[in-house]
Image (cartoon, rainbow over all chains, first blue to last red; front, side, top):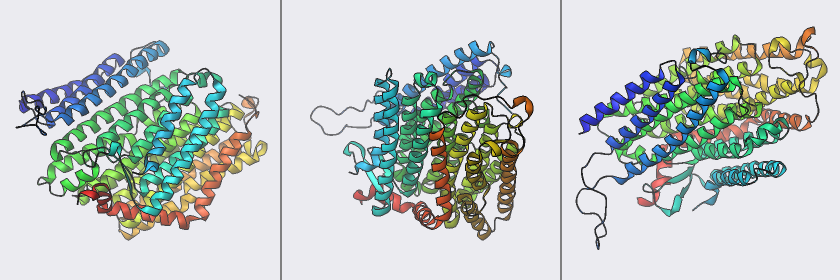
Amino acid sequence: METLMAFTVGGLFSAAIYMMLRRSIVKLVIGLVLLSNAANLLLFTQAGLLRGAPPLVPKGATQPTGVVADPLAQALILTAIVIGFGVLAFAVVLIHRAYEVVKADDMDQMKDTDT
Amino acid sequence: MRLEVALPVIIPLFFGALTLTLWRWRMAQRVATATGTGLMLLSALWLLAATWQDGILVMHMGDWQAPFGIVMVSDLLSAIMVVLAGISGFATAVYSLTSMSKRHEAFGYYPLLHLLLAGVNGAFLTGDIFNLYVWFEVMLVASFALLILGGERAQMEGAIKYVTLNLVSSAMLLSAIGLLYGLTGTLNMADIAEKLTYAEDPGIITVIAMLFLVSFGIKAGAFPFFFWLPASYHTPQVAVSALFAALLTKVGVYALFRVFTLIFTQDVAYTHGILLWVAGATMLTGVLGAAAQYEFRRILSFHIISQIGYMIMGLALFTPLALVGGVFYIMHHIIVKANLFLVSGLVYRLKGTYELKELGGMYRSHPMLALLFLVPALSLAGMPPLSGFFAKFILIRAGVEAEAWWIVGVALVVGLLTLYSMMKIWAEVFWKAQPEEHANRSAHGSAGSGVLYLTIGGMAALTVFIGLGAEPIYRMADAAAHQLLNPSLYIDAVLGERQ
């Protein structure tokens, strides 16, 4: 399972970078989406993958019995997803506004502020 | 439980919320902003005094003990950075009360300013690596919105590059944190540092260290990751530019200092060797980029990059004296850089342009401003007795002692080129006569610039003070470097109760 996840993460990263290297700003944002998801999945895989072992404490006990999944990593991913979502919403508005101002969907038309 | 550790974060967060509720009342927002940033500066000074007196301060959030809860830690480096954030935040807030137009204020400048400061202070004070990521994002989101405040074409173009590269950096940071968590099973920085000393495979640690280097390098504007900086820093309102120039890249530098003194010290020859090359290349490319520019704020933006190189050089040499130099350099740089941007804003206000070719004759018409420009400009170039001289002197001396001759040579040459750049601005803006065809351009005239002069004068006075009173500042930097070089002090302070 980890091997499969490793390839998924790698594929997502490379797709993200490919999209970000395109000239269209819409594809740039798609690349950013893929990139943040790739990072989240990497974090998820790093914490270890377990099937059907929720970190719950049985009634009457003070600690969970047996092996349980790591809840901390999932809390981290949840935080990262929320942050990523917020930032992405901003990025979408930004490219929309940039399109209105520049009247083009092309990064090559946006070189005025470079040196 | 030490409240003063959390106050520099709580105060701007509170005032950010308050100014949001005061959205329709411009005057109340302005009063709240001046009060809020002033209070933040006071709390930062309190924190520095407490940290100086009692050593490293730790606050366990919600009373969850480390390493299970999130901790906020204030060692001397953090406390110094928070004070600098307080000074530059207060100065730019006061400055923007005059410089910011009503239209820009109505877009929510004040709440964003407070949120940005909260993010910056949070990043300086947290002792938890994932929490560091979160504060980075708080800071970034606020900076995105501040950058495009006004919505002009140049701002949009700059913002797309700024947003993209910073998000790439965040994704890398998150991946690196994930890998580190997989390796150590903890997020508390002190705990990570301790666990890594028992780690079996040094190879993977170096890989993670390099991921952190790239991620923080992008945020710090180090070579070869700095391209977002000159593309965007000259586009926003000048008060925003000044605040960005003072603080944002320095958060990246701070993070580099933190992880490469506390966590990744397993293979210093390799990791810090790379840092040294990065430092040298950053200095050179920054200063050469500036030499080619003829726009006030673009020159200053490129100089941020070259100065970042000096700070990283202090970290990379990794001797006690070099770290002192690095910390000293950060202190000097934040004040000077913010001030230079504030001066450029005043010049724009008086003359209506940032283009050096169109400016001129300001020494004749505004001699006071010329003097106030000369103080930070000469300090940036490293002229004695101003603050920059001592900062450069300590670093170069550290380089000589470490026998890293080439970096010493680069640092000296870059210092010279910085002087050239500053003299270029001096000659073009203040000394030469203004070209006839641009002589009658004036955006605002000199109305209401008293407060602006006061802010710039105050910052210039601080620069002179750091230069003339270098001894106590040096001692503070020395103590901060001592804590950095002995990570056990930090680890014991955070995890102490367990042993």
